[in-house]
Image 1 (tube, rainbow, N blue to C red):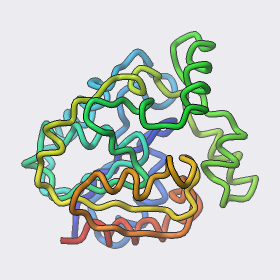
Image 2 (cartoon, rainbow, N blue to C red):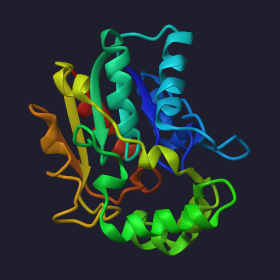
Image 3 (tube, helix red, strand yellow):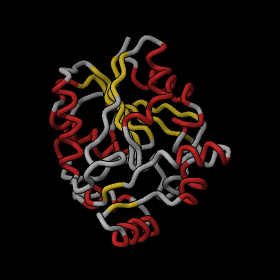
Image 4 (cartoon, rainbow, N blue to C red):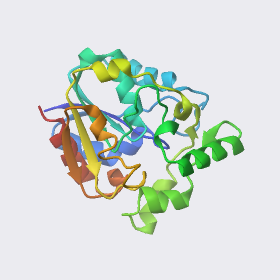
Length: 241
């Protein structure tokens, strides 16, 4: 059996992995779902990308985890790439699930299309704490379009505002691109959180990994809510030796 550390994406926190983690644990795997610094409700939002990375590194070290598969979803891809730079000896494999794999020196904002840059910057500027809320129309149509309205609404209610600074921090990533840790990319084929085509996840992001294992499944960016059993199975497929 394997050990998985699942790192969530923007607007999420660790507990939202619950349905997927339950499936993996039922199959006998050990699963950890830490929350990135500055994420979740009722926590300070004045964090930068280094704080986000440090929170996951600290979780791994404090729990003395090693020999695990480290997965990042969406924004979480930028985090696990940096975590791998800091503690490569503890990681068996990296999995990027519809996740950002930034070019060296880029920020997340450099990797999204212009309409997102404008929207994120505008929402952060209008907030009192430099955070970005998730507008429900975007959630409904671009992130979780394979859900019925009730599930879209109930999951949207569990989201939290996203710190904006980690979106704008430039990431060197030279050490990440020199690592020889095995890598996988999970691609949900109906994911339109990034517009498919020029700005899409696969092969634009996945192709930056060099040699990697590709695992695909039908579903949206939030298939963790709409089909957690299938996603869990695909995580096992992506994470196997």
